[in-house]
Amino acid sequence: MMWLVFAFGAWALGWWVNARLAALPRTRVTGLVVPLIFGLTLIAIWEGVVRGFDISAVLLPAPSMIAARFAASTAILWEDFVQTVIKGALTGYVSGCGAAFLVAILVDRFDFLRRGLLPVGNFVAALPVIGMAPILVMWFGFDWQSKAAVVVVMVFFPMLVNTVQGLADSSAMQRDLMRTYAAGYWTTLLKLRLPAAMPFIFNGLKIASTLALIGAIVAEFFGSPIRGMGFRISTSVGQLALDLVWAEIVVAALVGSAFYGIVALIERMVTFWHPSQRHL
Amino acid sequence: MQEAAVQMPDTVPGQSVISAHHLDLTFQTNDGPVHALKDVSLDIAKGEFVSFIGPSGCGKTTFLRCMADLEHPTGGEITVNGVSPEEARRSRAYGYVFQAAGLYPWRTIGGNVRLPLEIMGYSKAEQAERVARVLELVELAGFENKFPWQLSGGMQQRASIARALAFDADILLMDEPFGALDEIVRDHLNEQLLKLWARTQKTIAFVTHSIPEAVYLSTKIVVMSPRPGRITDVIDSPLPPDRPLDIRDTPAFLEVAHRVREGLRAGHGDE
Image (tube, rainbow over all chains, first blue to last red; front, top):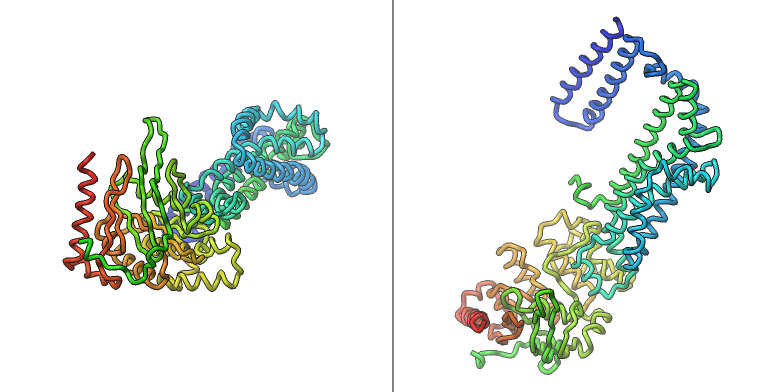
């Protein structure tokens, strides 16, 4: 009962503080503090409700339990992080996006590739990752290489489509201008079309950043050495060690947010000139 | 009125910079062929300021784009500096100013003016020197490090003129550069453009659909009419080269404007 009162109190307090803050003029500090208080309130209510109703740890462990497990298993979590995020997701992300970027330039240059390759790419993108992953695990083995391959398949198409679209985004007038300077293909590409394509390219990179993590984790369900976030999640569920599963999910959420945030930050620096990024 | 025409002191007669003979250009569209230009012949001498005026669809922009090798005539011949437009384009013989400023938003004003210089391989020191000089010329000194979206439309268009001037082409092709600007800014830019022309001695071809603008700026006014696009009148301006803005109230000015208006009306009449 005490815990339920605690949950209710946390809800009321969080609401009251945020309502007061929201009424103040918006500053950097309130912009950061308001969502933080919201998150903390949510965790407090979660803790109170789980303990108050005595919910089984298998169904939903309390945040404190997850935190304790997190602190106790940092070695395992780190090992899984390196295996899944660094080796699987990041390798696949960099090579998949890089390959898609180069192919996009070829597709843009040669029209027969646009007509031939884009439909095939569309087809590959429509294949469900659940179906592709076991096959790629067969081809590339249990270790991170097959996970990177799954990520490549997943990120390639969104990146390709966005880059191709971006390269076509310069206006006829801007291309005419380059023509009056007698600028060749490569000069036009470097000075006009790639800069103009940057908002689209970063859009692709952001979409790919979330797909990469999903792909790397899910692919591990279909075979993995005895480490990796996906492997840990699927085996810990079997052992009813749901607190460890949740700890892995916390890691995945933090990594995913950080990954997306870093890409968005670089985007803001590169495409500062775009109307969506201007703050002047 | 023809006898009132005086030879402008800074034009060099006989030295034809742009020369078109019986130029035809037909676009094939789904609704059948469109005659954008039909039997267009014109000579532009060195140092002239020639305006092209006419209603939309009369081929004035198309003609300018033919000079710039951005369109290809389907008949007749045209030379720029005595060579084909393509060779002229490859030798960077002209600067082109479009209807919109078209500055690259990721480059500063200085960076935009520097763009043709980078492409044409000028040294870093020369790039900086030229950027400073042409920005001075269009009265944008001090705005070098601003971005285009931080400037007004008139300032952006001036920057785009600076960009066309940066690499010392002898010919300036301008396609309704001030069409999107308001009257006051336009007057000011017209005045500046005349000063700039007097200082640089360039040959200028200028497309417009404003009669006062055409008469105020030009040594020669080419009146065109649509369907098919053709030249209906070529008027040599009797106005002196030194033109304060209030010259637009003088009888001589009004007379030329009247003749241009007559020409435009005649072009519409035989439709």
